[in-house]
Length: 206
Image (cartoon, rainbow, N blue to C red; front, side, top):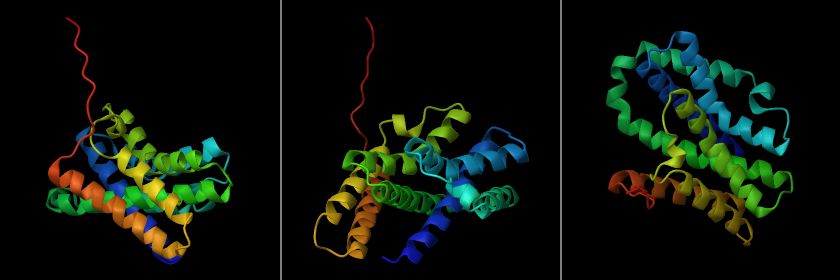
């Protein structure tokens, strides 16, 4: 899979994440500035947290400030067309799943290029895929999706493992990337379709 295709998917992913964040902001009656800020934090926060933790600079939105404009534009477009957004729920779920696996693979690549150990590479992928949503949920006063039983962070981790394991074989990088993307996207969509969850820990004192 070419770098160009991954870049296009990344642009689609940050656009969708910005729009879903704008919807979350609207449900809490935030002003337009708050909507744009929440959109930027959600779309770019995962990569920023990863880069800060790994000491990887400049941050992606510092190197490419046009991404900030894109997130703001997507958020404002969501405000303008908010009454139609409920009709696109299935599409948003699909594109959100694409964003999760694309962010994960891109995060893994950053850590690989820094020569970090496999476990750090996988964690870097998960942070890239999930941290933006965690920040969004915290700012919106919700339990982060990462900490719920829904298959989300686990999809990111498994995608990173498949990707990293595939790179240890003699298969071309494009095939490995496509396989990891397909695996992660399929698992996430199946989890949504059949309501798959991780086991819950329930503690109730007598």
